[in-house]
Length: 282
Image 1 (cartoon, helix red, strand yellow):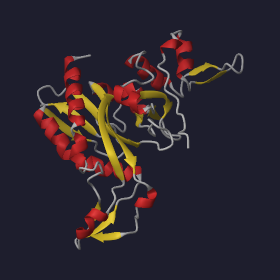
Image 2 (image 1 turned 180 degrees about the vertical axis):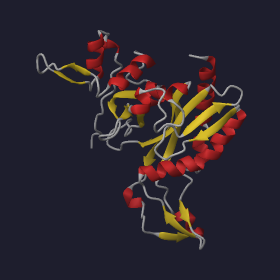
Image 3 (image 1 turned 60 degrees about the vertical axis):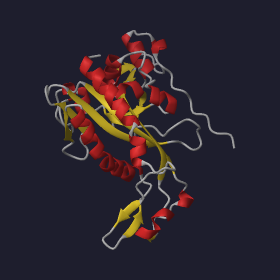
Image 4 (image 1 turned 45 degrees about the vertical axis):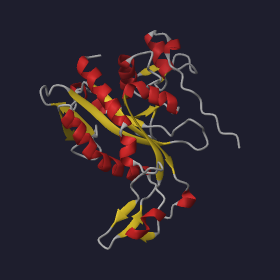
């Protein structure tokens, strides 16, 4: 690991730990309660994860600016909404040193103690496969010294405690239940928290592991294999043709890490097996 990456990641991890207090009330609820209009009406925030993520990003941006200034970096925001990453930290003295920091949020699962819903860690499409591509990315993927997830874990409020149709006055602020609470922030290189499964639907997104303690410790599927295998697997996932064990002499698109390692003649036992979800006993 380069000295610049080691130093930046260490500082970002320390910085992440300070953010819980910045966005939370003394009781652990999110300090954002709703939207306010010119007549001082407060409208409750939706529990939609995309809305929560965007508001958190706006709330945190002043802190990111402080962090960048204190450590000698400029921040470049993604030019378009669907571009990667959310934040590019560019070293002022040496602009060749760049760090991709993507802000990712997810919630704890009520029915599975110790597990979260998981993060989507960015695309493994064009800009990931072609490291010089500028499609949907602020700078070419290969230009970044490291690719980092600034992760946010939270618990959702009970649906019975939230009324999205209610309009309150500023004087009634204490009556509003925050839509999320118990926020935890962390920073980690995305390959260290990656799964070998996709992160969302039919889109080409990299998925994360789900056991919270492993997420916070950077104990992902590829941790024993290394970043090069992570890159090579996800570059080839869904593209490379490997032998189909169910049909002798036939081939199928690569979908599993075991298939990739066997195809490469590598040790399958090095896969760091994710902890399985076990439903809470009622």
